[in-house]
Amino acid sequence: MPYFVYIVTNRPRGTIYIGVTNDIARRYGEHRDGLIAGFSKRYGLNQLVLVEEYPRITEALQRENRLKHWSRAWKVDLIEASNPGWEDLGLYPL
Image (cartoon, rainbow, N blue to C red; front, side):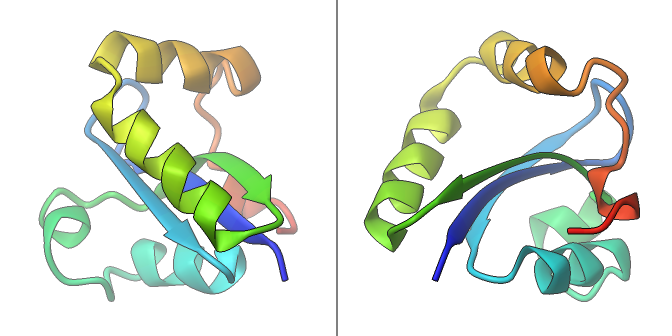
């Protein structure tokens, strides 16, 4: 079963949230519909801008932890390297 590290935002270069899931389509829907209480709902983080796949949960959790300690500029650079237009990847088949 694959695991996914993902980043959602509310607009290009806006607020960023990093998470882990084993069902990226379901999790995207939860963010999009505001079903996840807390930080992501409070800031309207409903656009999926980055997804990375890992074969094991331990790898995904390690990557999430590393990313959360990165500077904001590094996170923005990471997103823009693969998604320069900050397009909502959830609008495409996941």
